[in-house]
Image (cartoon, rainbow, N blue to C red; front, side, top):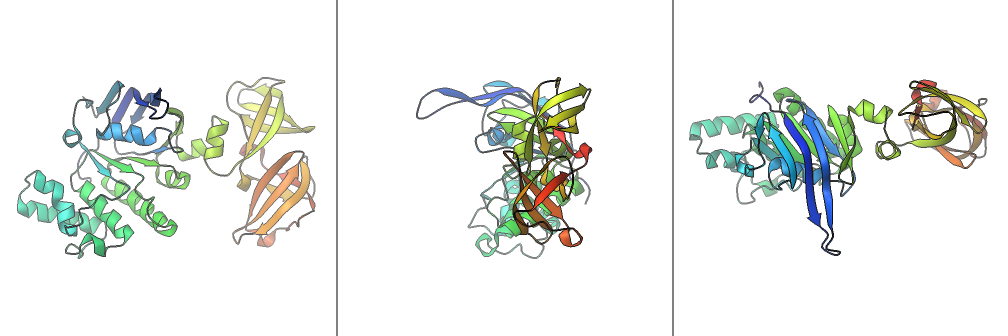
Amino acid sequence: MESIKSPKGVRLEHITKIYQDPKTKKEFAAVDDVSIEIKPGSFVTLLGPSGCGKTTTLRMIAGFESPDKGEIYLGNDAINELTPNKRDTAMVFQSYALLPHYNVFDNVAYGLKLRKVPRDEIQKQVFEMLDLVELGGMEERMTNQLSGGQQQRVALARALVMHPGVLLFDEPLSNLDAKLRVTMRTEIRKIQQKLGITAVYVTHDQSEAMSLSDEIILMNKGKIAQKGTPQEIYYRPKSEFVADFIGEVNFLEGVIKSAQGEKCVVDVNGSSIKADSYGNLREGHQCKIVIRPESVQLADTGEIGGEILVSTFMGAYQYYQLKTGNTIIKINDYNPRGHKVYAVGDKAYLNFENSSLHLL
């Protein structure tokens, strides 16, 4: 199937949404002066902890909430004044929001019937969408006869059949079990790429965001903490919050010995370590080195040593915790079968590529 229509970009310009705390009666900014540009045909995820403003941002794009300041554009059109049904968007909800007294066909056809699309055209489009989400032949089933994954596919087909310029997802997989979530996110990404549709996806699950997205927008306390590709967010976080939110991470305290451009030499407990830096770090300043657990191996010799506190076989990797000074470093030593395995109480040293380190 080709793209169902030309995808549209989304642009948010200085969007702010103010709510009142029901207990204190004080006003607070759920979304605080946020500007975002989403390219047509891209898959962008709004990621962050509970209460960070990601769902409010999505609901303002959909028209379920109105910004107190700023303007939202779909393509070149300002849409602040448009009701949800007048916007060229469709939403896939966390709760599926299916009509229980309708069968699969009628759930998917519902929006088309409201638009008074001819009956033959409705049948053609619904069957086409059911085939796309791999529910062909199940059109007569009632929704209570479907599994959670199948219900989510019906919800996806119902949104896609409306031919939206932008498809919105509000934590659509959070009600599914872990294994089915992985399957469904793969299917959602496959369908999005096949149709070339613009998708904006909200989740608090970092692995969902990493696996689905062309770009991640990580939010915290109503503001954008960082935006970029999954690789940029993971390998070059701009803050401790970003580094800690995306994946497992270690932080080593150090002092800058020398800094030139994005390259630094850092003193860590008397050892000199080279690393990439973010921001303007100067000689003598304290800093933190970001080290991912999979970027570290253990060795019998090296610059930074310590004692093994935990050594656990996890199948694909040996998991360690090593205490160096007052810091505990987590290590995932992948494919441990051919490696030396250290036991609890052993002395060991950290071994890593300088290019895998990142300074904050």
